Image 1 (tube, helix red, strand yellow):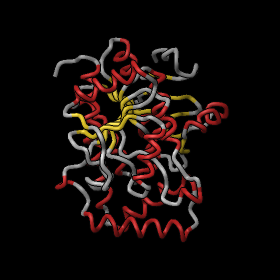
Image 2 (tube, helix red, strand yellow; image 1 turned 30 degrees about the vertical axis):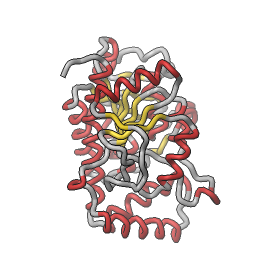
Image 3 (cartoon, one colour; image 1 turned 90 degrees about the vertical axis):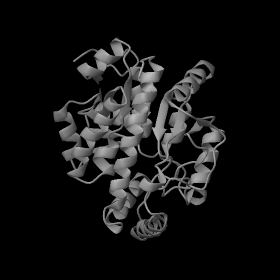
Length: 311
C-alpha cells in the first residue's frame, strides 16, 4: 500500500489506485461506507457498492470508499474489503467522535458523512458524494438531537454532493443551522432544496449552479476565503422521485414506529430507513440507490472540473 497523506492519521492506508490518482493530480471522489453497512439491506448493498463506484468513474473520477478496518482508516477499498463492509452485521457506525475509540481499540466501522468528510479532506480529496446529509431532528427543541454532520462540514473544506437531507429530519431547521455555521449551499440547476426521496422539500435556496464547472469554481473561491464545505444539492427529476403521497405516509408511519419503540440518537436513522423500505415495499430503496448514483456521477464531474480535466 502507498504511504498515506501526511494529514491522515499515521496508521491510515490509501488504496494503490487512490494514492496514484492523488499523487498524479487526477480527480478523486470520496464515498461513505455507512450507506453500505447501515443504509441499504443485504445483499442489495454489495451490488450498490459497485454501481456507485462505477458512477463516479462515469463522471470522470476515481472512487475512494472510506471505512475503518481493525482500527485503521482506509481511503479506497479493495473488492475484498468492500465485501467485508457489506457483509458484517456488527460493523459499528463511526462519526468523528468515534474514530479515536476505533483507532485505539482496533475496532472496525463504517464512516458517516462527518467522519468520511474528515478523512477525505485529510487525504487531499476535494469532492464527496453521498445520498442525504444528517441534520436537525424534528424533536430537536426538546432532545437537542442534531447530526454531527453539520458542524463537521462547517470546518471541513470539500464539495459534498447530496440530495438534500434525509426526509425524516426538520429540513427548514437544518438549513437554518447550515446558515448559522456559514456552510455554503447551492442547488444544482435549481433553487429548490431537494427532499431526498422527493424533488422538493418545500424549502428554497438563494443560489444555484448551472454545471460542474460552476460548482468547482464556487468551491475554489470558498477555499480561498475560509475553511468549510460547499453543499451541492442535486434533486431527483420529478419522474424519478418517490410518489409524494406515499412519501408523506410512510415517513409519518416510520417516525411513529421509532417513537413507539423508544429508538434514540444514532439508531433512529437506520431504524427508520428499514421501516421505510418495508412499508413502501422496496420503493424507497430503489429511489435511494437511484439518487446516490446520480450524486456520484455529478461528483465525478465536479472533481474532474476541479482538477482541470477536460470532458
